[in-house]
Image (cartoon, rainbow, N blue to C red; front, top):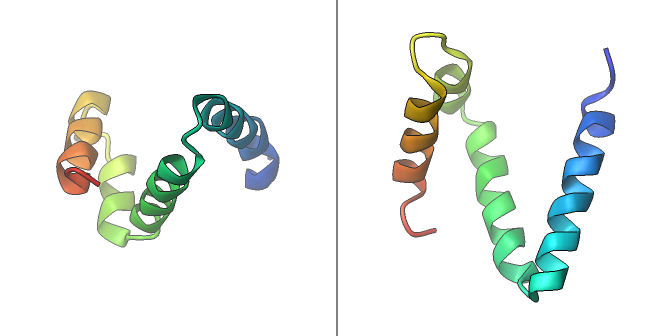
Length: 69
């Protein structure tokens, strides 16, 4: 299996290019830092890997947890 960094690289590049074009690097940086912190949380990882929740339910829960962040 490919390394996670190899898989993530094109997405990271796309986000950077989008944020730079929008002139909003700081907001995107903060958002990605928040999502990174959430990804390290055991409860969040369990939610995201559970087949008991639909993708929509998972996304809605993350949006609720993040609030206005």
